[in-house]
Length: 115
Length: 115
Image 1 (cartoon, each protein chain N blue to C red):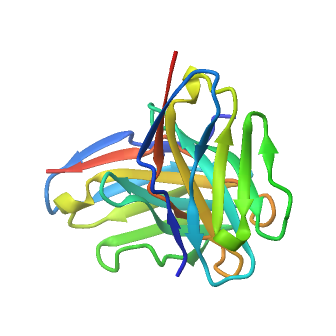
Image 2 (tube, rainbow over the protein chains, first blue to last red; image 1 turned 120 degrees about the vertical axis):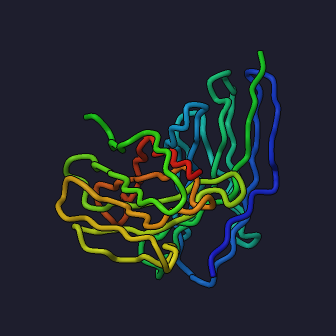
């Protein structure tokens, strides 16, 4: 069964620094898709970035990038030049290629960016 | 584009009462997902529909919970004989298509409190 684990409960950083959030996953599938979502204080959940397992290049969108280490079943989210508004809870998620479109989420990492 | 609409935003029910939660997906989106979010369990997948057809309800509790999508403009999640442990935020998400571009767009959620 698929499983996503985020061990960092919370992280605090200073504004304009770089932060990395960890995520490890378990799957028996050779094809799978990894996602990061952000939940703001208002409760809104927003898609940030995805990595398809067959792609070797790390995905990058704006100031978000991924560190995909397939042998370690790891997909870290890197936020560069953090801003106050990046403060939120970040969820890692996975969809298996053979599992339809069911998405399993990790427990989330709370990021606090201070001025 | 109004985004995914969920009503009501808050609902309080007494133990044993029925609760019906509504979701209006983004117009033109072909897939609708339901999730439940609690502090203890985090974000849990419940079920999803594709082109109004139920595809995977593996996350739905076997009793008391049911979901329908009678037309492309709305889906409902019904909980019969609500129990205090059903208290959670219920989130609906829609996706424009299922495939390589299956990003999910989340609604604001319905906060259900069962007394």
